[in-house]
Amino acid sequence: MSGYLTTHVLDTARGCPAQGVRIDLFRIEGETRTFLKTLKTNADGRTDEQILPATLFEIGTYELVFHAGDYLYAAGTPPEDPRFLDIIPLRFGMSQGQHYHVPLLLSPFGYSTYRGS
Image (cartoon, one colour):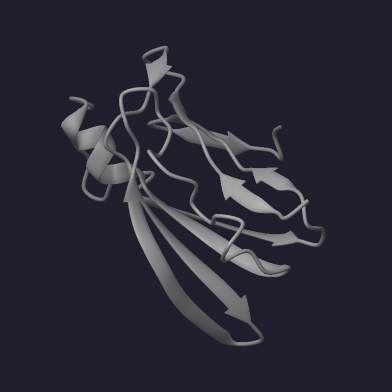
């Protein structure tokens, strides 16, 4: 089975999927950080396509960068200067040719992530 990468962003403060979150994907090789693509979450808090499909999957280290501040502003969260959570980078390794699901549970003052299924 070839591996692939997906995500899901949930707004835990509002109790709903986080629609419109911009997500950038990077591949990390040593000190080199290579941009691969940008996607946005849909009404279900997921991307319309796999972030990294099986045809492009490679074992290695990756980084998802969630642009949470823009989402929080659009969702009506009162602005701060600077906002407590703005850009959230998640760096992780994919060591097997499997499905990797990296969700983000988001609120204005905290977040969590895990390897989902």
